[in-house]
Image 1 (spheres, rainbow, N blue to C red):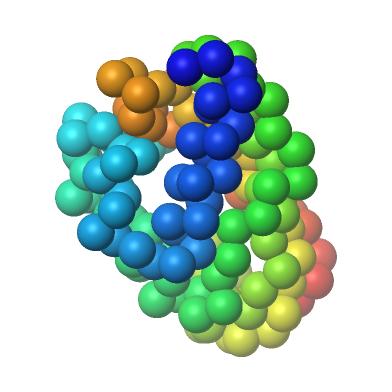
Image 2 (cartoon, rainbow, N blue to C red):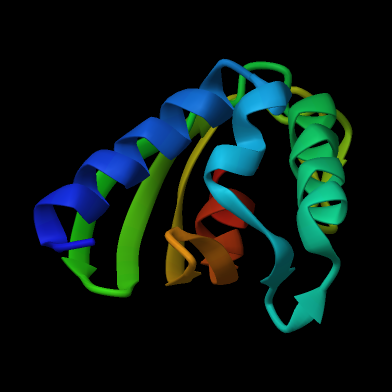
Length: 128
């Protein structure tokens, strides 16, 4: 994929996530996917996302910044949501918070093979 195709791919991936269209997730995520060094495949990746949506009922992935350099994607995602209960060790308890996630992806076979992410927990803590 070239950079323009990667951008289209990534936007499609986020549409899939925001719709919670798990039947289509395999179009974007490799069967051997890993997240932050934990290899758990497509099923584990989906379970991680389902848990995120269970913890954050109004979760919506928004691109604040993205750079596409085949076979990699780097993005800053912006969130404005209300996690229920404890979230990342913080007692958010449904309070509306805004924060960013910085994520890097490596594609293999035109699918997300590795993802590394870091969530700005300091921004969340400052708001609660």
